[in-house]
Structures are given as structure tokens and as C-alpha cells.
Length: 162
Image (tube, rainbow, N blue to C red; front, side, top):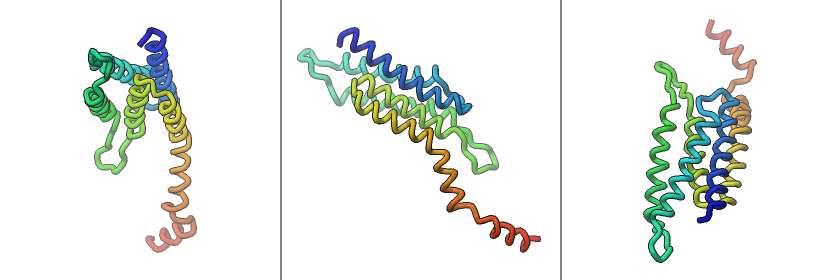
């Protein structure tokens, strides 16, 4: 790998992580540009290092060894993500799952950048942003439509409960 390719892979990883981090930061979540930029950069670095270190003298990459490194990375990132998940005692409410999933997908996007899989990383990034942008409004709409009772039905229940 030449210096230009290394720079491109690492810069792309940082930009992708930072972009997802910006979304999380703008929504007041505990991760942001620096955190997710570092997660993605670290993932790209580890992937590139594993690919470089696990190359045989004939130039063949030991795919199973690189796969094990990536598996360990994704498992470790799961522990980082679990640190932002909060369950309030006495409540069914769990917070931080989207942020934890953002950390996890950012690590995977970093792996893709480290591998130089640009098309997959680009398409996945677009899908991530669509989910982050449209997911909550879609959930609210569906909940209102199928889970909430109509207003008249609510009033009837309240009258019978008194």
C-alpha cells in the first residue's frame, strides 16, 4: 500500500465516523464527531494493520486471520456501545440503543474503509443517514397510527373509569 492509499483510507474513515458523530451530537447524544471519528479511524487502522501484518511472503493475505481480527474488533466495540445504554430502574424505557448501534456501525464502516471497499461503505453510509434522519419520524407515525387509541375511544375509557 502506498502513502496516498493509506491517507485516503484513513481520511475516509475519519470523515464517515465524524459525519455520523455530527448527527448524534446534533441530537444531544453522548457521542459526537470526535468519538465516532476515532472509532472509525481505529477500525480502519486495525483492519489495515491486520491485512499488512498477516500477508505471507508470497503476497497473499491470510483471510481467516484478518477475519478473526475484525471479529475481535466488532466484539470489543460492542462493549464500548454498551456503555451508552441506560435502563431506568422501575421503567420499561431503555435509552442509548441508537447511539450504541451508531458506534457499532461506525466501526464496521471504518473496517470497510480500511479494506478499501468504497462502494459498500458509501452505500451503507447513505442508508445509515436515511435511518437516522427518517427512522424516528417513521416510528412516531406508525405508533400513532397503530398503537395509540383514537381520541374518542380514550375519552370513553376515561368516562367508564371514573
